[in-house]
Amino acid sequence: MWPRVNGVDVANSNTMLQLTGSSSSETVAAWNFVLPMNVGDYFELYWASDHVDVILKTTAANAFSPAIPPVLLTATFVSALYT
Image (cartoon, rainbow, N blue to C red; front, side, top):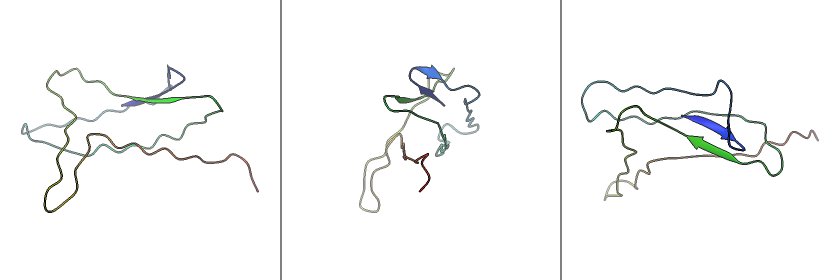
């Protein structure tokens, strides 16, 4: 998983997640990228796998809990201006 800003990969930002064991291994991938952005810039989050059997799984809501989405992304504006 890695970020792109304005269509360009952010240098030295790629990450790796490796699951081994049973085919039912699951985890939540959670990384923080703090990126300088300017007006008009855009951000993309990319991921890739060299295995064709990788899935982004979703789980439907049930009587005990809400649904689990396949991806969560949080974007926060942090001002560079001091008050």
